[in-house]
Image (cartoon, rainbow, N blue to C red; front, side, top):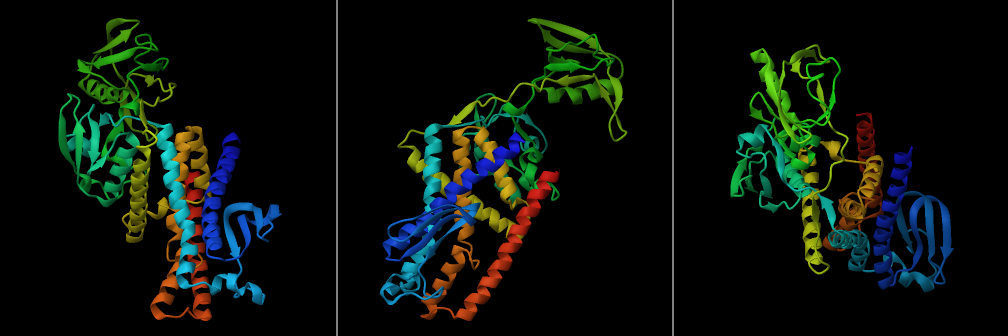
Length: 451
């Protein structure tokens, strides 16, 4: 229940901030161009709070916090007194109307830069791009455990988050990319990561693990958290033992133990498991036993479980000074915009699944999760959401800002406004497209909850 209420609250906060900035962009530019604003509303539906200013503008906070609008004086929406016609939106030049409509997405774009600047100044806690487990395509490409990722396809990767974004974009395109790294021995090297070898049916939500990379911070140490009663390790190993080798082969992580135990079991007989216990190094003899999986298959097991109770600690911080954070925020906004537009293109071309389209349920969950990770991560989330709102609104879909801009561009080309009939037809098409997009987003949200 706490997660549910937190998700609702942080979604309202997030959308409230972003919608307010978006609509203020329209409002501010409209007023600067002499357009009379009748209502500035954050949210839709029944007003929860309402105030009328001296200039006649009505400010409203409405019950449904999934958007907002700025209602301007317009002769197409009702009778306008003669003395106010010069302040009607439809009486302004096409360039003035373009500026007013584009101001909303531009406000969200500027807000994205501001939020990222604040995030860089505060410092976003993250993980070092040091690999703790390497297998599959990554191992075949010559990348090893202990390597530190420095660049992926020319993109700097100072933290694991940056590395994940770069790897995911390249994996979606199935492009082989150059990876610059620092090896475990401290030497810089370049490897060609063969992402073209990724299977076509790979889960697109787990591309980086499919490549075979796990950061060191996520790797469980080879420490015994529990010994199953009656198992091969019962009475031999103890909770807190750190396993250092199995049958003479060194162990660095808990995931290393399983394959070594299978080899030991296949060989037959007992083997030596070396451990550290209370500062002492011990060599203990254990004979693996066969166990049955849920699917009916069998495997060799010692009967131990890892200690997963310790939280994963951040070991890196992405931070810049107040001055250096300005170009860093602008560059990050450009990179995120390029990635977002690239993802839209991939979904349209079929290279990326439409499961990446998310709706309010997913937004609420991510808002709550990022708020729980600290102010820097929440600012990062707000920045990405603000940028997404700007890009979505610029799509050439009637009803959205991008649709209106398309109308005005056509007006510039033909020298006169579109006919009322054409605009009404466009509105119906826009409604249908928007309803389909929202339906897909809700479907994906529900699918994620079921999973």
